Structure formats: structure tokens, C-alpha cells
Image 1 (cartoon, helix red, strand yellow):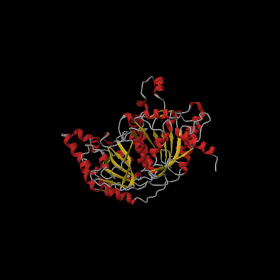
Image 2 (cartoon, rainbow, N blue to C red; image 1 turned 90 degrees about the horizontal axis):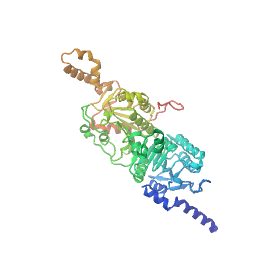
Image 3 (cartoon, rainbow, N blue to C red; image 1 turned 90 degrees about the vertical axis):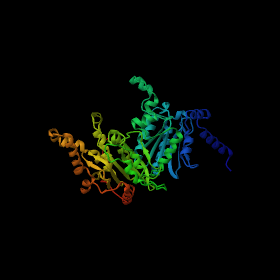
Image 4 (cartoon, rainbow, N blue to C red; image 1 turned 30 degrees about the vertical axis):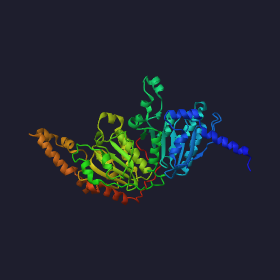
Length: 507
């Protein structure tokens, strides 16, 4: 029999680990509307499945068991996931050498096991008293974020402060979740902004969830509180594969086919807008569309959903916002999503109704050429099954960028009302026939005649189909059927690009 002294010591250590920062600090955490690190992990993981690692580690300087972070693994929706949750009740969740080593160890295990990694961030930042050791800890995390990128899904959940260099770990992950109630991200806080820029700004306006969800595009998902946010993470993980060597699991869902309502949703008058979400809902499985960055760059809609139980990624122009044109933010948003789907074997559906790239000096001077090229690059590079449906307008370089046949679409479908050209009829006639219009006795009547002729000769989808740029012109009522058939035919697609160390995307 073992000496009871050993068992008593172990029980004492376990009790101290679970006590975290003590009752008063836990109360303060709850008073702010925040869960503790362990409560968050309990909600993230399937009941009773979480296994902690490194619980007895401590920094010689702080002498805190666990060093203000809880790391481990368990099952989420029945599948293995690794995680690290910073504990704000201990030293404000600050990051020191041991704290970082625990996170790095969990990340190494996640990569070795080809499993997703989730970081739950709630920290006062670098532990000042540990100096350069703290900074070195961050660099080790950043390195692992980069090496694991494209191999395993990485999700960062901001549930409290995340400031300074600490922000770059979430930025290197695939997706960032934030809460309106408590999360903040900024490189320099309000006090520094006031001191350096002489500008008064609140922490929420500078780096709150809505600031990053709507303005900067840093946050991909925004929720009201910890509980809703973590449930969102669980739901999102259910749509992802374990790694780049895997595919998302199929699931039993409620199929939908309301394609016969499309003509009521989408006007054939090209000047009238509509909400592309309503088109997506005519064929995507009920309640499965999980939109990414829904409040940022709303002229393009991107997200994951299930089609007859299988996960697909959708990129769609949004005519109800900026007429669906592509600008800098929309191009970057869509490009990053396309690359994520390609990393993790998620087929892509592109829904096209785009009048072109957004014109204007602001866009030009801010780099629309460079940023717009990101989407061209992302689609051209992607080797997953790629299906495109041209709904109405597909004009200019934006038509090419939205996964046209010649940059790699496997199948391109179009509705009979689709228009594919360098530009719309009105703009084209103004340029091509300007002399005739200037000399005409009735320029208004002539202009309408020329527009009709241009639309008849150059804009209809049958011309593009003759040349092989469109594979099929389909009726709206057949939309779901034809999309399902397209992906079914591409299920076993295998394509390998020429070897290279990596490309040079126009960042």
C-alpha cells in the first residue's frame, strides 16, 4: 500500500489547481459577465471528455499551479479537439514562459494528431515581470500558428482583453470569434492613442467586437456573450474536417428545394436588387448556412452550409449591397474564404451577379488592383471541386474573378437571364456609339434601339455557351438539381498543381 502522505499531497495539488484564482476572483469574473477558463472548456467539450495536460506546471517566478492557462484535449461533437483557455482569475491571464510552453505543447500535439486547435483568449497580455521570456513565449505560439496553417483548423475565441502582440496569434488563425459583452482586441489601447494621437476613443470603439466585425474585418463571428460564442464554435467545428488530410463529415439534415420560387426572388430587371441569402435558402439544407463575416464587406456573402448533407463553401455577390460590385474589402474577404475551403477540401459554389469592380479614386489609390487580384489568385490556385452559377450580371474583370471557366471552374451554369460581357449594354452603347448618338435626330430612341441590339447580340448566355465559357443554361426551377448533380460528378476530382515552394499571392 502507498503511504497516505503521497495521496494527500496529490489531492492537495488537485484542489489547488481547481481553485484557480480563488472564490473572490471567480466572483469578479462572473460579475463581468464572463465564464472562468474551466467553465468555458466544460461548455466547449462533450460532457466529461476533457483531459487536462500540464496542470501542475508553474513558473518559478509566479509559483502559480498551471500558470494561468488550462490546456488539454477532448471530444467536440464526438471528434478530437485540442484547446488552451487563458485563466483571467490568475495573474489576469498574463502570459509568461511556462504559460506559453503549455500552449505550445498543446498546439504541437494538435498538429501531430491532425486535430483542430481552439484558443480561448482572456488575458492582460505579456507578464511584465518575466520580461523577454514572455515575449519569446509569444513568438513560439506565432511560429506554431504559421506552421500549422492549412494543415489543421485553428480557431481563436476572444472572451476578454487581447492587446498588443498577443493579437497576432488570433490573426494567424483561420477564424476569430468575439463577444460584444467582454472582448477587445487592439495593438495599442485607448490610453496610448490618447497620448500619441491626442484622440479620445473608448476601448469598445477602438477594438470591440462590433468594431472588428463591421469595420476592420478582423473578427469573423460576433456573439453577445460567452455562452452563445462557445456554442457557435461547436457548431462551426461540426462543418470542418479534422485536417487537410480529411473531409468534413456528412450529416443527416433537412433537405430543401424551393428552386421554383427563384423567379419570384430574382427580378429580370437588372436595375432591381434582391437579397442573395434568399437564393441560397432555396437549395441549401435547412438552417445549415453558417455565414462568415456577415457584417463586413456585405457586397459579398461567404459561408459554409450543407447540400444534401455534404458541406460546401458558398461565395455569392450581394446585389442588395453596393449592387454586388467587388471592392477591396469584398475581394480580400472572398479570397481568404476560398483559400480556407481549398486548404480543407471543401467544394466551392460561386453565385455570380456582379456589375464589376467598384470604380473611383478611393478604391484605386487604396490598391484595388493589388487587392482585387487576390480573388483571381485564390480561385486559380484552388483545386477543390468548383461550380459557378451565373445568375444575372457577369461583367468585366469581376466576371473573371468570380470563378470563370478559364481560371479553373469545373462547371459553369447560367440562368437564361444571365448577361456576360465587358460591361452592361447602356455603358457599352455610350462608348461604342457616341458619335451616332451625338448626330441622331432622336438620340433617346436610337439609344434604346442600340441597347436592345447589344443585349440581343452580345449579352445573352447562349453566346458564351457556344464558345464553351458556360457549360449549361438551366431553368431556375432546376437550380438545386443541377448544382447537386455537378458536385456529385466532381466528388472524386483529383488535381495536383506543379511543385513549388509556395506562390506569391499579391498581399
